[in-house]
Length: 383
Image (cartoon, rainbow, N blue to C red; front, side, top):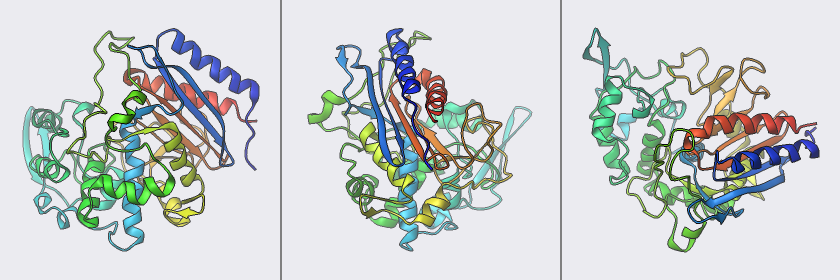
């Protein structure tokens, strides 16, 4: 039986978010909560663009960054259902330059390269055990090479990105532990190689159009520019300048790990499809068993090499999955799954309570605070 939403608690949620906007912590936000598959709470707060004092509309377009990952992961599962891709396919089958990969081993200030114990697979790409990393996660030898090579530059295509990445060593042996990384960017390139379509075209044809996600893409067309949500020019906590993806530029690099723009309405439809176990409004994207597979833990006892996975969580195929009722610093149920974006967007789906919730804002440095706050406030509203 689905939990009911408590009206006084929802009013408190709204008042709390509004107070943070008024205090200048974030410029604005859009929040949505659904129970039993129906959106029952949808509110806008603050301004879309603080430089123009433009009120936040309900169809504002946000940079969703890593909330791109669940969408691209699902696209790979679409290809698996069709038999065009398999979980144990080795990455060099699609991009030979990843053959004979080397792992960087740091020892007493020196770095030596050793052969990878095995090849990276599609499964590794989906669960972030591929051996790759992100430059922003630290300053080890591999991350410094990523930084110097400007990995992820929007001016190169997905195929060129893979060539650039393959020229650098791995941080870890494939399959040995969870390391959040460019793995989903590589997965996007694999989708292109298998489908013969650009990643953007494949997502549009197989996910966005079937689900009615009409404003989700790797750039924003001119006629929608006035709907793009913008951050503060300077971070309210650090005072540093805030730089985010330019929505107005169509990139050559369609980043499967973090390149999409979209609205709260669009992403809520994607979540509704996940909640409905693969279908929405009579359109089936994938099967019920594929969603069950996607939202199950695929790490088991493997170590987690960074703190992006909070205690009590494992990782499925593109989403974090709750494995314990306790341990985590927020309430939730076993089987809940979530992810978020570095720009300030976040979502969670709790099948046990039949609830999903989505917060969209553009405040990179405030993202963890508001992700945690929003989750607490939503669970407080469940009777």
